[in-house]
Structure formats: C-alpha cells, structure tokens
Length: 244
Image (tube, rainbow, N blue to C red; front, side, top):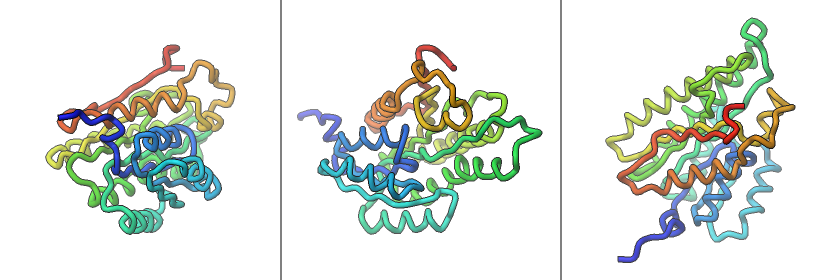
C-alpha cells in the first residue's frame, strides 16, 4: 500500500484558526493551505480578513473568513453557525487569538486592561473550544498557542502571564478529558517570535534574535501530521539566542 504524503494526509480536512490575519496565526494558515487543508479564518479586522482570503484564493481549498471577537459568546455562536453551514466537521482547531499589554506593575495595572487580556487569552479560548467540540471527531487535533509565558513570569506582565498560566491549566485539563475520544490537545509554547505583539510591551526588542512565524508554523504542522496513535503534548520552541 502506498504511504500517504503529508499533503494527502490533510487533504479535505478543515481547520479553524482564530487570530488568523497576522503573525503566527497567518503563518499557520498559509502552511495548512499548502497542505490542501480547508480553512476557517477569524479575526477582528475586516480588511485583514479580506486580504488573507485573497492571498490564499489561488489554492484549491475552501476558505471561510468570519469576523469574530472571541470574547463575545454570541459572535462565537455565529461563527460556528457559519461553519456548520459550509463544513461537515472540524478536524483541527488552532486557538491563536491573543493580546498583550504595556508593562505595568501589579499596583498600577488598570482593571480594564486586566479584564481585556483575561477575556481574550483565556475566556476566548474556552468559548471557542467549547463551541468546537461538538464538531470534532476522533483523530482531531486542538493546538492552543500559549507562549512560554505559560510557564514563566516577566515583571510588568501580570495580566498576560496570568492569562497564559490559566490557559495552560485549561489545555492540560482538556487533554485528559479528550483522551478517551481520540482528540489530541497540544500546548504550543513559542519563545520570542517576530510578530506585532512585541510593539505592545517591548517596541525596542532585538528582532534579529527572534524566530519567524513560519518557523512556529512548521513545528505546528509537524505535530499535527503525526500518526493518530501519537501526539506531542507540549511544543516549546525557542530562538537559539535563548529567552530574550
């Protein structure tokens, strides 16, 4: 029997990527499109969603772009209503939507900023995952983009660290709950990656030392393409320069 190539392996599968219009989400979308994987792409920028749809339109895959603020339960429900109309199921969920915040020590951190970060990075992941589970079957894969902040702390980043530590707890719990159903759950923990999020808390960061989003996308693709009876539970990937 001829062994399936990686392209054949993902052929006609469907992946949902939140926060898909830039950075790591955009790179993962492009990597999956190259493997003939159908895509559902969400974000909070209509123009950016149209732009990435045009970029990938030359491929032979089905692409659904949908505006969605993952903090809003109604918008998440609307997203999955649209998904169910176009696709039979989801095979891959990439929870990538996330925000950072300017450096504030805890005593000066505004409550609204704290709430926005927790709502996006933690509650949003919960809402999307909960809505996705009825559409996923045995053999599916969930990848939660957590960053290395899920296991480390950095002064001035209390809300971001709290959201990512909480998201790791959610991810690990979800993995144990879904083992009997044959759905893999992967904690993606990239180190310093050259994306726009650094403009929020360290605009002068030495970007030449960072990884590219395409590097992270390659690691995600490799993990997704493992045989169904194997999984990588956590992917920590760092620049060779170490933690910046």
